[in-house]
Each structure stands twice: as structure tokens, then as C-alpha cells.
Image (cartoon, rainbow, N blue to C red; front, side, top):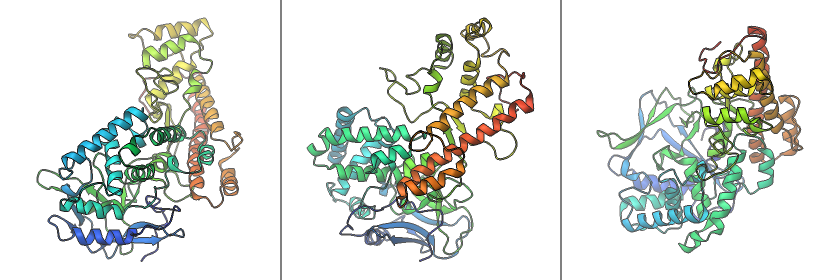
Length: 502
């Protein structure tokens, strides 16, 4: 088979260093699945769609799909009928089995909840039910009374035999916690671990004949293989992916009234031996790693995702903040410790995966402009930049409490908001520091340090690559805002409502 893509392999979405080889290898399971599905109506598998399973040193296998010959833009390579989609509401799932899945999911949400992170989101209709259904399939607890259910049973044999190495499932909990310190996914990973501990100890799985190991394996497969809002798609889900449009070469079309099939179509000319790559979405390195257990380019790459972002620590907004600007934040923006996930309340369960204060990757050219910041960040910066200790500042904040009053009124200068943002960035950079909490003086120091502390452990190296990427974003913005005052003048006023890139 052709050499693996230099972009990294999803399995990573698929397998890893995990445990003894399964009685049925993934390669054999996939071959059986193809033999079972090919004769069926609406199933099409182009011979140029070639799935290769690479043997890893631990005995497991990782998958990648390559073009066996030239493929022209627009050609359809795979079609899978809707009834073969794996999800709890599929018509082929027996009514009794569907009821059991619903009961188990409801009991888990009640006994182990709240389950609020993307990995275990009980409020995402069908998500927890899909994990439970796949757990039952992996333990051979679903009947095989029809051909679709038989296909699903064989499909389970083509899945990774151990949990995909998501950071939330890593056995090196403290090491992962240290490596992800201060990153955009650190809180989500920590909350996942607490949730999984509650799931393991509540007794619901054992009471229904399920195991924690099967649940964790199913959970990792759902996270790394589910197509948004759809479910699991046999054969198609062997494709690795990218978050960069120019690297993607295939797209997925969902069923329509006139076409009851999922179809995989080439979006550009694909040469023999090229890996087929599907765009997963616009994800930062952190989100990509959280969902799929790997990062494009691998641990050593310094490449940033087009969707790279930095989450500004919400707690520093309220650290030492006077009551008057706190009232403005609450009344004008609904920003309180509860709504940003710093504390909990009856109406605000901890929403650690929906941060409000995110800085996107700055543009590569020119000076990052005030208007290019997200509106919520601009508004918070304006409020926090008003000097609440002065009579003039208090007067401005009092006027801001009036819903009919402008959020600013020309009373904050560019120099003031630049100073506030610089303080945010400094704190964010410090939290993305080394193991002792101190930040490196420059991004170039980080790779050497990581090679020494995480040598030989790809998972920890990927953790560190995530915070290195976010540190790069913090330092890029730090450099950009220095040009604001120079370009516009220290006394230039800014508007929280400004949408202009200037």
C-alpha cells in the first residue's frame, strides 16, 4: 500500500497502543462487512476506494483510505442507504431494544448527571442513546433478526478494539492535566473525567449487563466517528479528515427525498495513492484533539489550524472587579460568574465547553484591527477599561446601565482597551506555561522542553502541541495590539459596537 499521509492518521481515530489484538482483526472485520454489503441495493463501493489497515507496534491496526487509481472531480465513490445508518431511531432497531436504550440513557443521566460536556452531552438528543446502543452492539446484546442488524454486528468488528486515545480517556490523568493546563479544552477534559467516574460508579451499566470498558470504547467511537447530526456510517467512517478546506478532496451528501442514500463524492481530481480526506469542520487544534484524539501534522508540527483560537480566562474578568462594572456586565450582557461557567446555579449548570471570550487567529498580514475582535470581547474590554475608581468613570458606567444608552459614548481610548487586552493575554500566556506554572519566554523554547518531558509519549506530545498553538495565538495578538496605538494614536476613542475593520 502507499505510504501513510504525512498529515497523521485518524486512528488516532482508530486504535493505538492499547491491549492485546482482538480475536477478529479490524482488517478482517472490514472485509466481512464489504462482502456482506456489496450485493445489497443502493450500496456502491468503487474499487478505487481502497481501505488500508496499518499494523501498529502494539498489535492493533489503524485505517486510512487511498485512491487505487485516478479519480475525477464529481465522481461518486461510495453510496450507503439510509437504513444502514447506525443510530438509536433506525427503523431496524427492535422496539424492545430501543426502549432498553432509552431507559439506560435516562438512568445514566439521572444517576451520573449532569452530563454536560460535548463528549457526554445528555441534552443532545440521541447522543447518549447512541453510545449506549453501540455498547450493546459491541457486547453482542442486540438481536440479529434482520439483515441490517447482522450488518451492524459485523460493522462492530471493523471498529477499534480499544478506546480511541482521546485526552479525556487517557490513563495518564495527571500528566494530561499538566500538559493541557490553561488550554481551551482543559476544563472539558477535567469535567469528562469527573462524569466518567460517576458513570462507572453509579451501577447503571452493570445493572443492565453493560461494562464500563464497552461504554468507554463506544463513547470514543461516537466522538471520533459520528457525522454531525447523523450517526455512524459503515465504510464511509473509515475516512480520515482535515479541518482545512484546501486539503479535503471528498464530501459527504446526505439523503434527500429523491435519493435515499449517503454518497461520498470527489471534490477535486485525486491521484493514485493519494489519501482521501473529508473536511470534519472548522476546528482549532484543541477541539480537533478533544474530538478525534489526534492533531493534523502530528506532535512535531508547528502548523496552526485556520480556526485556531485562544480562550481568554473568564475568571480574570471578575478578579478584583468593582460592583458597578459587574452590574453593567450582568444587565447589558448577561455576563456573570454563573453564565460563563465559573460557578453553578439552578438555572446555569456548568457550561465549560461554551466560552464567551475567544480570540480567533489574527490575520497573517497587516495589523489586527479593533473591529476584527468578536463583539462580545470588544464589549467586555470597553466595560473593563472604564476607570471605575474615578467620578468620570463611574458616571460612564451609570449611563451604561441605561438600556437606551450607548455602551460607550466615546469615553474609552484605544490605549485603554489595548492595556486591558494586554493584561488578559499576559494572564492567558502565563496559564499556558510550563509544568511549574511559569510561561516560556518565546514559543521557540517550547518544542525542546516538550521533547524532554514527553519523549516517547505521543499523546502527551499532542497535548503540549495544543497549548503551544494557543500560546502562539496569545503572543501573536500581543504583538498586534502594540501596533494599534501607533497606528491610531493613544487618544483615539473606540466603540464597542464598531463593526469596521479599522
